[in-house]
Amino acid sequence: MAATLTFLGTGDAMGVPRVYCDCPVCTEARTSGRNRRRRPSALVRDGGGCLLIDCGPDWRLQMESVGLRAVDAVLVTHPHHDHIGGLPELADAVRWTGRPVPVAAAPRVLAEIQARYPWIGQYLVFTPLIGPAEFLGFRVTAWEVNHGHNGRSYGLRLERPGFAWAYVPDSIHLSPAEREPLRGLDLLVLGTAYYREEAPVATRSLYDMVEALALLAEVRPRRAIFTHLSHGVDLREPYPLPPEVTLAEDGMTVPLA
Image 1 (cartoon, one colour):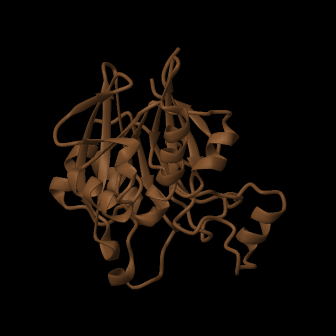
Image 2 (spheres, rainbow, N blue to C red):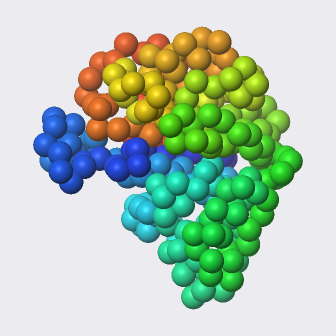
């Protein structure tokens, strides 16, 4: 059986619906629920192995939604709350089960996690991603990317014979060097908060879909999936996207082959 990628959460930092908001997207998310989105996270499964990418504050609910009680390892893209807020719950699970879980990220990311949760290293096995490392049969490489107003983040490129893909949930206006790892991909998972974002460029931290399509035209992945969607994206709308580009939904599973 081929490896699969399941989107546990496809929302932005606040999720959808927003508590204060009665926009059409948030209203639909409270009713029929297609636009209901938890904070961004994804799960790679192959055989009996499970690799979690990011561990945000919805981690417990996300695990319950797919019937999982444990993961084998975690990759973290950057230390913002929507990507690491579930690590204390993961550490508590390790405390009770005694089953150690490696948490791998760039050294700067691990340092910020340890500064925020000084006690957490008792339970989680911090693994610096300095060069390529292997997880679940994938050769994993992390590289630094521009996160706009929010500073810096990391993309993850995962490869095995016959298939290469990347997970880049938080980035904008990548430099030529930052775009280079996006070439030669079978699948690119990219964060796009809006179809077209009207906020001033200096205040933004993610691509919008229009900008992302221009990026795709350059790096030419075989397929792309947009995630990290805000309440400015309505899955009921027929956005003018090419057939090889899909909008992610919570619970969606795609093959990595």
